[in-house]
Length: 175
Ligand SMILES: [Ca+2]
Ligand SMILES: [Ca+2]
Image 1 (cartoon, rainbow, N blue to C red):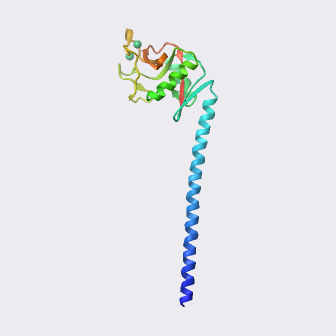
Image 2: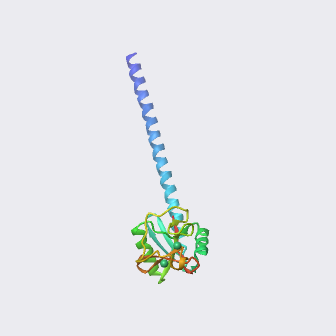
C-alpha cells in the first residue's frame, strides 16, 4: 500500500510536471507569435518607406517624399493616399531629422501637418488635436496679411506660417 501510494505520488508529480512543461511551451509559442507579428508589421512599414525616392527614419516613424511640391490640401490628400499623413515633428529629435531630410532633398521649405484654419492662432494636427511641440522662427507665426493658416518648415528646422495655397515640398510620415 505504501509502495502503491509512493508510486501514485510519483505519477501525479510527473503528470503535473508534464502539464507545466506544456504550459511553458505554449507561453513561449505565444511570445514567438507576437514577435513574428511585430517583425512583420515593421517589415511592411520598412518596405513601404523604402519605396519612396527619399526616406529617413526616426524612432518608430519614417519621413518619406517623392520630391513633389503641392499646396497644403493636395499634399494632405497625397499623404493620405499613401496611408500616412503630412509630416509633423512631435519633439526636437524628430524636428532635427525632418530638417535633415529637407537639406538632403535641397528644398527650402516643406509643409507640416498642422495649421490654424479652424481658429486663428490655435494650431492643430490633421486629427484636430492641439500640439505640444513648436519650433517657430523669430516673429512667427504672424498671420501676415491675415491669410497664413498653414505651416512650413524652413532651413534649420524653423517653423513659419504661410498661405495654404502656396506650393511647397510634400513630405509624409508613416508609422
Ligand atoms: Ca493664421
Ligand atoms: Ca508668417
